[in-house]
Length: 87
Image 1 (tube, helix red, strand yellow):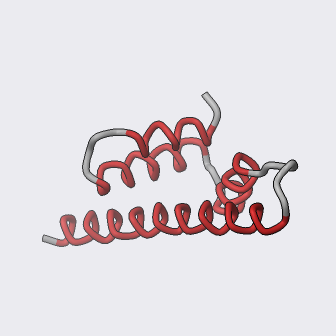
Image 2 (tube, helix red, strand yellow; image 1 turned 90 degrees about the vertical axis):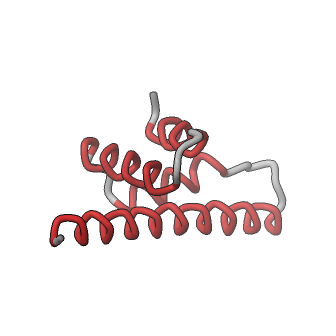
């Protein structure tokens, strides 16, 4: 299963966002997925050469916002793990 497909499957799960973030984080850690790779893959998967410039830009913006949301969820999950370990 490709990296993006796996992350897409995690997004579809009917579980709390924190759990999704932790699964994505573990997957990235296991695969040593660099942030740049993650961003590049997200953009590559959404690129449509047939689309006009405006549509490509709109799609890229949506994909990057989704990626930012995913990264923020991972940051929150890490913070929660840190608080749990400190308790």
